[in-house]
Length: 432
Image (cartoon, rainbow, N blue to C red; front, side, top):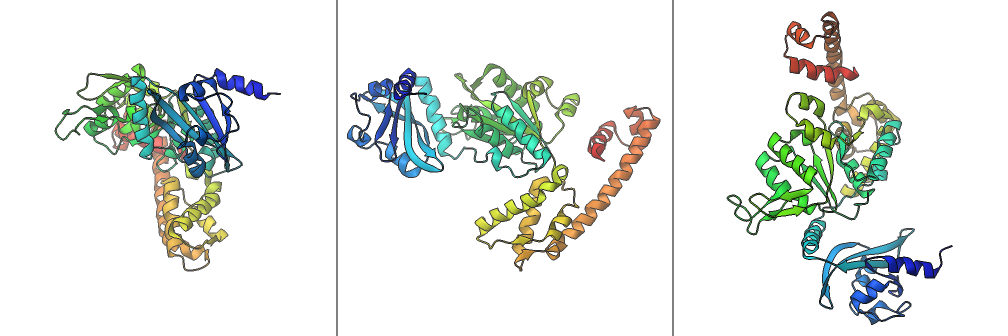
């Protein structure tokens, strides 16, 4: 059994200063480093913290319940970095704890950047348990994600558009030791090469026309101590891939037109809906970067592979719409689920969300019924028609490949298409 004397010894063994208060702002724990850094006397446990620190920031934590990470303050001519967190038990704030230590000039710069990023809202919000679904496929994905979160290795998330790659990235971050650090997402497909370079690596003043006065830190610097989520990494240009590889190897970044090398401690989670192995074969993606990223791979299931999750997903989506639009809660008749389960959802959960939102916004009754899916019937029919055509084409391709004994070049000539088109169709028809 651990006694108070043991707890105090554990607190005193920490290199950080630690001070904790209860809900009434009475000090319930303090270690030697805290007393030395803050200039506090002994025997203060059991007394109000305001007696020694009249305007203590701990009172704000007790009132708001919000954590404050990376605050910088000067106390007794020392610059210290402070983390303040609420103590929550069964959903109730029962106290607050503050940890702090002196910082060097480099740490000072790094923590200022981190604080700016946290204030900008660069925090993950979705935990793995928030991801909706109980099918075996989604449960397995969440279990693997939880396992990957316990490491600090790079993770590559693969899945079709709309399968929730960023939700899983956020969940991994929040289940990791970096949970209190920033989570910074960047869509590699949304930015042209030169802009992506300046966003990732930052630039110094005067680096190019229109460069911000004083320069700008890159996302690697902002993500220091946290996670950088590189979405759609398959769209990244070869030159940027080379720069990214160097940072992953050296764990250092240099801004555009800069001379100073900045050490960075960043975990990379990358995501793609493209076949990176094929891109490597086609010389569109660096093989060395692929192997660096592909340390831990998380395959996300398509919605058609977890069709039994549709009722739960629909209920979740309706709940979100109700809260956002201040709408009444709608029941859903079983016939609606029957229709939705017939579709193969090429856009996955994102497409399902669009369909459900339209049904809810147009519904005039107390429950969603089959009549509310009428607009969807045409889409369902067209998709089934397209699928039948794909199955016929897939069968032709299989027969030609059998005749040519797997020779893709010869098969492509017979089929009247180039080799890359044949390869793409083969990958698409694998599930047919």
